[in-house]
Image 1: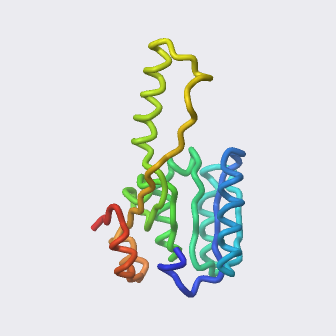
Image 2 (image 1 turned 30 degrees about the vertical axis):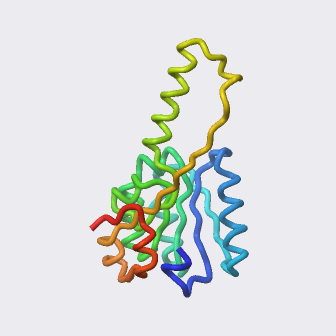
Image 3 (image 1 turned 120 degrees about the vertical axis):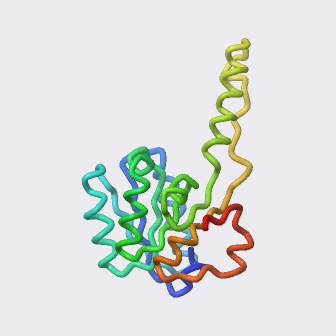
Length: 171
C-alpha cells in the first residue's frame, strides 16, 4: 500500500473482535511503524457499525485502510468495497474475494487453495490417520490482486512495477 500511496502517513485498520487475528493487527502496526506510518485501529462490533466506522476513517484523512480478515467482513465485502470507494479510501484486504467484489487490492493466501488443503487433511483422517500425527502446514503461495476499476474510481494510478508483480489484475 505504501508503494501505491507513497505520501501515506497514517493507516487505518478495521478489525472484528476475533482474537485469532490479534497477531495480524500487531504485525500490521509494527510494519507501519517501521515505515514511519502511524496507525489507527478500530474494532467493528458488527455489520451495523461498518458505515459509521468507514465514514469516520474517511473524514480523518488516513492515507489508506487495511481490513483484517473476519467473517462479518467477508460477508459484507461488497458493501465494504463500496463504502471505501465512496469515502476515497484506498483499501487492502487479505483475500482476493474482496477485490472481486470491488475492493482495491489484496495480498494474502488463496482461500480456495486452503480449502483444498483442508479437504486433503480430512481425507487422510477418514482413511485412518491420527490428526495429531499430521504436520501443520502454512500457506506457501501468496497472491497480489489489483482492481483497476476501483483504482480509477479512487483517482489512483497503479505503478507499473506493482502491476507487474500482481498475480491478477481485474479490469
